[in-house]
Length: 342
Image (cartoon, rainbow, N blue to C red):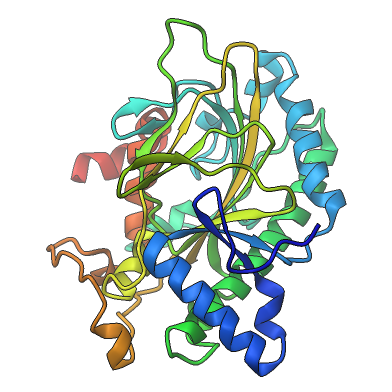
């Protein structure tokens, strides 16, 4: 069943991205819906994206197969072996807001060769490099890279639509989101909590980059903070959940809103799987705030002007800080020189 774009489902708007390429009147109505969702809520479902069902089901199939492997086999690609923070992280070894998250995951970035060391190069250039893949499950690489390419395509389309909704040219952001864009995929397993365990699947936070796309299974657990407290982002079949990141909030001077969210661990005996995709610009991008039309600028909330405002530095500097905080074991092994300078 096709749900109408603009409908609010479980308190989140539902947006049909295919309307962006529709007739003029339909496109204008779509842009109004998208602008409202990104300005008022910061979270919305996206349908009409065209990602094949075999990829959305396939990514969960390989996720279940990987996390069913014996733990010693999962640890063959543990992220401690990767200066780029890629690979497997066991439960409790990633931190959000200073507390360990109850999840295990594989972190995957763009598949690139590590550049040769260059004296004086920014430290963040060392984030560029290859992924780790399980030799025992070769299909995981094939499915994940295909899913990653589709997630990038859909995310770029949503970003282009947001550009138009904000009164800019459709290509406004394209130069920062070319083939060198900083993308990040997580394949996540949330085990059912035990009675005495914390229910923090992921602690409350805002996403740092521009846009995040989430494919969630039918179990649920994602919660969004609204004016009256937390509410569930109930799974909608065939949809992705999108949310605005802090960089896009800052670039629009607070007109678009990055909203706090969290994941509650599933009930005992229940497993949850999800695959988020994070869209960031090129690591060397220095993104300036855009100039909003007067009517939108009048409704911009503004952002705090701090000395370490992320728009004052290359995106890679801020991305590196996030990795170092989230994965202290990897940081100590591969980034001790940077830690000593901080």
